[in-house]
Amino acid sequence: MSMMILAATAALGLQAAPAAPMDLIIPELPGTAGDPTCGGNAALAAQAFCVSTTQAAMQGVADQYDAAFRAQGWIAASGEANLTVYVRRKEGGGCAAFQLLAFADPNRPAAPGAAGYFAFATIPGDICTGSPTAAAPQ
Image (cartoon, rainbow, N blue to C red; front, side, top):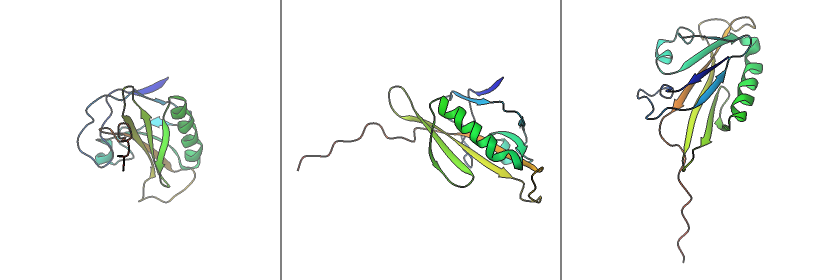
């Protein structure tokens, strides 16, 4: 079974919801569970869909999500140590985007069996420009 975000919430750190629904299928992976509290972070829970797993499993789960998103046509366009931005071209131009944030509770010691979390949130608007502008003749 998969969880589908049809009208996902706004990007992490933003207050407004996206203008249009985004078709993103988040697979339900073994060893993960939906976490409506986002690890007890109410502000994040109001803006994202979260799942929990163990810290030991996080890299493997992230790899499985990445493969699932690539199979849906999403491209990992940007990222840092714990944040990846995925982009997909829309028919008619422009792009849809979402971000995946991996995190743990900073108030608890890191441990293989301790909880780790993934937060999924759309990035509202179109993050891609339309077609490239032709250079003006000189």
